[in-house]
Amino acid sequence: MIQAATVNGYIDTINKATSQRELKTIASISAGKEPFEKVNLANIDPKATFKHFKGVSAAKLSDLAPVPPVLEMSREDKRFIEGKDVASELHEGRNVAAMEWQDFKAKIDLSEAKKFLK
Image 1: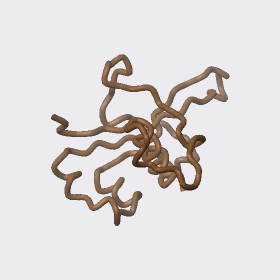
Image 2: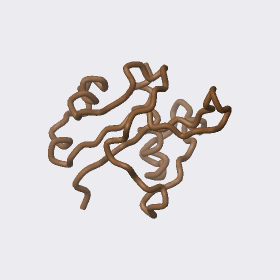
Image 3: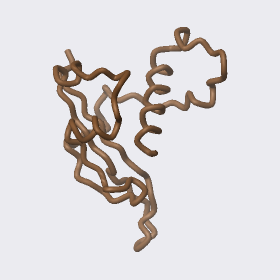
Image 4: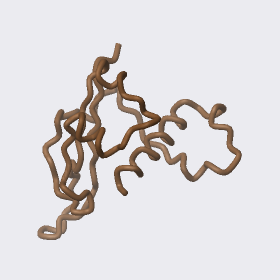
């Protein structure tokens, strides 16, 4: 049973000083099941909700300043699934109820991520 969810947002970037690739955490948030269930997702302000759950990020995500994740996660954990590009497959009139659950989840994740990048 899921008791909490943690999301760490990463960016794969080039370090301008060393010209080496780096994976940096630029946003991190964690929420327990009970407090999260009380949130009406239809009426949230993403930035206010991020603050409410004590999410951490740079003042402006466009600055790409790294932050310490609220919880370190091992990507070797078998519960992680590969990301999928479902946005390119969407078109007007597509029945989202007929989508595979992984594709639907990926679409929602993409939609929510776009809200935070505004």
